[in-house]
Length: 479
Ligand SMILES: [Zn+2]
Image (cartoon, rainbow, N blue to C red):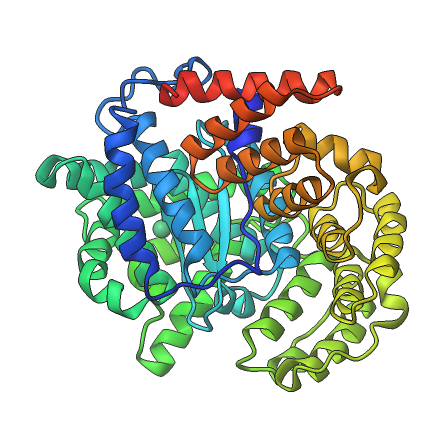
């Protein structure tokens, strides 16, 4: 269980090709292609996946994985998806921490949509999207955790699966992929595709008899996740009530309220939830400043926010200058205070072409924030750009990449290029395989793992991990 969770879990990052207008059609084409290649994934379940799924009728793990793979490809290419390693790492850390108690069959994958509209949505295959606008509308981390916990609970309580099962019953299994792809396109703002598929997709997301029951169940489950992680449990309540008040004032409901209706009785119950535990964190405040900054719409909000931490005020000044003008000033001593400004500093060194300096800074920073994938992203980009040889990389980072330890797909693409440029074909193939695995392309993954094993490596640990991966791919997809 652990291993597959690790190898198929992944976090989206930026600097990937943008193909908003073509992506869905490409997705649909590849869906049809892969459908014929997959055969019947519904019947070929991994032994590691069977434990808590064998009894589930209808929407099987195989189907969920199939939809997940299609959606992951879409997340990789969709124009509205935010490619920011810093915010992705923050969201994945918070989301996975909250979800850890739900014992997920398929690991969660979280992504940001760069959009000031307040929205969040869960998709089949344990995929959850959050708009940067929703982050900007929250007042503290417990509110954000409340929304995430609520979406995670829609997945863990099988609300999403049950919605899509209905669609499958009426229109066939393939329609699930189309509906999910349409719903994701609608959320990320691919206007053309959304018009074609979004209406149906939105229907699958929202117009269901069980909505009220689902909403209540998701609230209750979210409260448990918040309590377990020491958050103030009133987070989701206060956020929903803020939205409701705004809605009454403006008259136009944000999409999040439409897909998560809050009837009066539920609002009353939520408002009575006892509040204790922590409500915010330094990381949350910094991530929120960055989320507003990279969305680049309401830059003035950066300094209007109330910050609990002194560091946030300084980071806010940095981003207020950068937001709008696009000019990054010096991050100063902030770079040594928290990993989020450290990524800003690494990014600025990379952008200035000071690649070796960036690598040295990140190696030192990783001693303070070990395995921080946002920092490792900039480390590998710098190594790639400066034509650093694979044997000159930090041994710890290289070993983790050889074994598929990290979640962020882009780390593997950079590493694959570094290995290829250094003439290490086995490690390059394995890195391409991990990248494929984490971006919804199990066939490419299997092909490249086989290639890596065939070429061979003197790292026995890496090789045994590649063999485990190929066995997992075989038992899950019959590859
Ligand atoms: Zn909901």
